[in-house]
Amino acid sequence: MSAPQIDRARLSRRGVLTAALAAGLTVPFGVPGRAAAGAAAGPPRLVLPAPTGPFPVGTVPLHLVDRSRPDPLTGPPHHRELMASVWYPARDVARYPRAEWLPDASLNALLTQNEFPPDVVSTPFTAGRSGAPVRRSGERLPVVVFSHGAHGHRFEYTTVVQELASHGYVVVTVDHTYDAFTGFPDGRILEPLRDGDFFLGARDFADDIPFVLDCIEDLAAGRNPDADHRPLPAGLRGALDPRRIGMFGWSKGATATAWTMLADRRVRAGLAIDAPMEPLVETDLDRPFMLMTAEFTRAEEPVAQCWSHLKGWRLNIQADGASHRSYCDYEVLVPQLAAVVGMSDEELLGWIGPLEPSRGLRIQQAYPLAFFDQHLRHRRQRLLEGPSRAFPEVRFIP
Image (cartoon, rainbow, N blue to C red; front, side, top):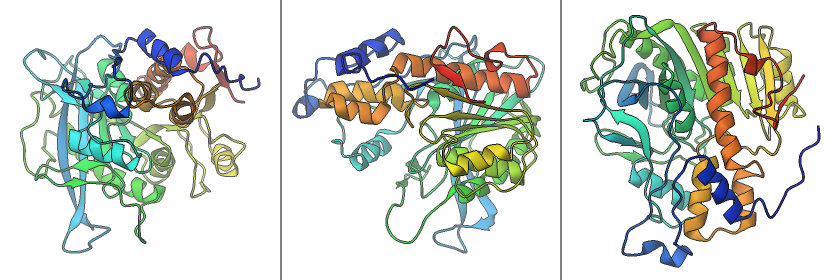
């Protein structure tokens, strides 16, 4: 099936915002351009879609220090230092505040690096309630780890993360320090390092994950891995099932997902979202692995080579009109930003591609959940067995 022709009328800013409203979002209208963004009412707050699962969502940050590894930038005596967040099904959430998507200081840095004015919008709230107690139902909860893209952050797939948590998963998201917009408990705000000789590749991202898996095992055993010994939400210790761990990532983090699975058998199933797959995967992988491709397709040799080494259950799906950002939070956040800063239709198209935000949202909520339900919970998912009338734009690539 060929890619659809770009419908400029459908992809106008008005059309994209209408699609965002159809997805259940509140979009900040009434701010015509960049100059008006500093109006007295303050910057409009971006909005994330609500998860669809039956459970409220809780979240807590973790400050993790791997004392077995030196800091890759400064070296000894400093150790590798990471920020992570744990997302989980929660209970009794009413008195716990909603967590922010990205702290405003980090959001301003992200906006500035992408040539938007700082303070033009406020960070969205997530569905996660900070510190809320964990909902326990008698069995341990399956776990999914998330690795972000290049120059990204651990919140960029919050739509998927809180969707999984609302359906009973514990999700651990990780900032890969020095290639992430991240903040530490002592007030340090770090941005991705883009200049000079220092560079973190997909293998470096993957090198962070075994320690994160160790911390998951600590939580499962009732220990607190937080380096500052901050209190954990009630019920989190002992709630995780270390025998049911999956992983997903986007872009560089998607490639890191494959490399992690090659190095650590604790990860039972992996989902790679538009992965460049460089460096090349040259070893067979015998566990379930799924590709959600967009711009990095199997026409690219690194992706095709990775596919050839997938010897277990495997699947490649792709949505017509999908861009590199179609399966992440930017699919629904950038159209809102466009209304505020006066982004042109062409600029908006360059950011999110021709796939309508409402469709991208439904895809990112449905397919990752189906994948982990099938391979961590062993529940058959017909959505993964072939084309669906509910998702006519999603193709199965043989």
